[in-house]
Length: 187
Ligand SMILES: [Zn+2]
Image 1 (cartoon, rainbow, N blue to C red):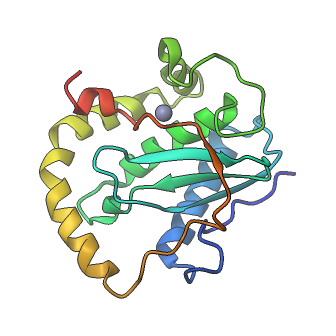
Image 2 (cartoon, rainbow, N blue to C red):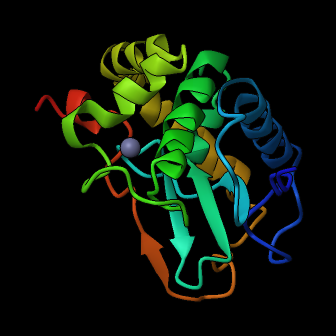
């Protein structure tokens, strides 16, 4: 039996939010529905991370491999962001975990995004449409929504101070490529 996803990646530095909890549950639902064959040999933590300009999410692993962490761009909390985008973003990161990027599992290819590896894995698992939805939305909708989302994000964050991520250990950052940045940046 796999360990449950932990609902936040900020440890005790910040209180657990309901939004973090929903993210974690969504990861677990996706895992159970589409990735049930993928073992989870370390702890997986998930939560809202940094309001990156182009990246929507990333996965990384602590150097001691004790835990992996999926961080989602908090700008996606804007109410106009569809639920399907959450599914697409999280499924993408779970594929990286399954293929050994940001996880202790054996690497299945040299680079995380080589030769459409993520697309193929998603398609094989019946999630191929999610990347298409994400690419279209990322190209046509998100650029117009992002500024407003950022303003809203700053307003809601005024109550918090930026907490250090976890305990300051060094990380092996794996998915430095943004989800679908290629389409968004017109390359
Ligand atoms: Zn990726």
